[in-house]
Image (cartoon, rainbow over all chains, first blue to last red; front, side, top):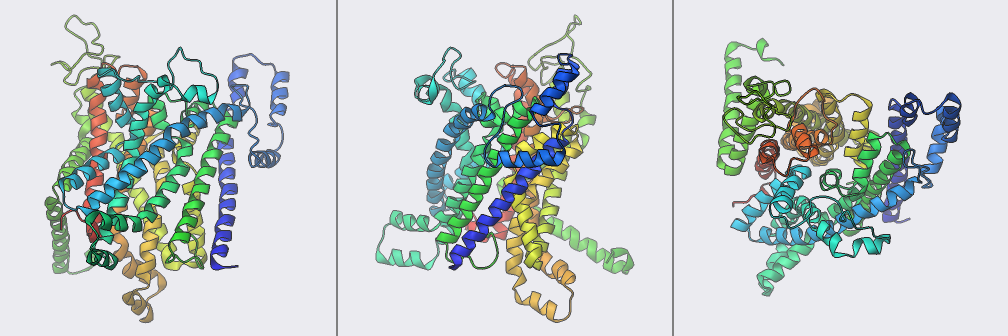
Length: 331
Length: 306
């Protein structure tokens, strides 16, 4: 096995182990939670003892905790998420559309901001000390450090309530009843609802990409290979393109990490804009103590982060030969 | 090595060095106008965090504002009776704003300090000892990275009644991973430097070498991440409170925003939205601006002005 293959195998093994541990942690935390969804039903007097026993055995809650753990592990790792307790629907058929809604909002936002903010960051890094540099750093510092729900509320007040150009809430207007994804997402009504949360997500993510790109270019600016390019007679922009290309790696890996975290949705953004995404669904499920829904949602989120971490590590090791793949684990 | 055991002169010298250190830091922050402005905001915030509840003219939850006829003043814009206006329940917003600074301040300060301290220690030990110690600590870090922070925090807060200190513990328990990784990679490079090797060669124990020779050299980055930790903790506290998972016994800025949002009054009651919203945004931004000023010292290659 080459060094790189050994590195890959080790990272893969670690990721699998991490998944197992993370899933177990979710199980333990959920078992620690006091109360169960049935308690509400029991105290409301809607169920007699016989019915309670029946439902408990239906969900396997009468077995020992180890038996429950084993059956939990075997089903969640094979993506069988079971039945939502409160919605009487398979968990996946609740989560899938929510996850799609989240991804359709956040993936384009992340890609947009990665391209725009990184380019801007490279440009201002090249023209150090300019007004544009200071302005962009202050504004993105403000935007990335302010909690996203505050930015969201301020945008809603300005654009939805005062200027009245976009709706403040939801993904489609109340009257719309679209069938299927194509019908839902390809419509002017959707675009109308989409533009504001999309903008907030773009500006919220912009700060890190801008600073990463700027710092990368600033560090490269004095280096030898650029002197060569200058001596060769390349224009400023052509030199910047080469400096930028050489500072792409941190941006690329950061993009991979962020992409993994997108599966969590931006809970607060979704709550503020009433966007029916996975993060908002999770908050509702926690409040209603819908165990199967909660554990499936958290599992999906954790798995996405683990895979993205793996991808980022491998990308780094593959593209940057100075990262040692032989020895230790993550860089 | 406590200062009391030394002669008096030594003690004075020490106090002198410390005050000089503080004055130097102050002078340093003065140079960077942004960081200086940030420092003023943070100082004001700390003042409100400590004294805010005493300054509040009324009890933020019990007291209701009434007009001359004695009827409840609901959703009143700023007036003489209530300088910042009133909420939908006729509560005084100025009082809520002043009292609400405290939980934000406690969670921010201690959550940030906890994040910095745990992360620094984990990174230091992990980087210095290497081997299986490093392997275990870094896999633990990976685990906290893979468990999504917000959902896990929400889960834990439904299982125990939220209190300010519990929130502080949860936040520090999740955020330490950030400084841990950065400090570790710094330690890895410091560990190979000559003065560390000579300390080991002259017979210093591992613990002594780590604490007296390696740690001081990575301390600045520890402080930097403590500052960032404070900003993250404030944002996390405000976010949790906004989702309704905050301490139910205390008014906080995040909770004020939740109430105005839930009651559907953000459309009209700008006087209710802006004080807590602007305060949170100003404090988190200021902490980051101060952090950036220090980051430029640690890594001079990224300075704005040459």
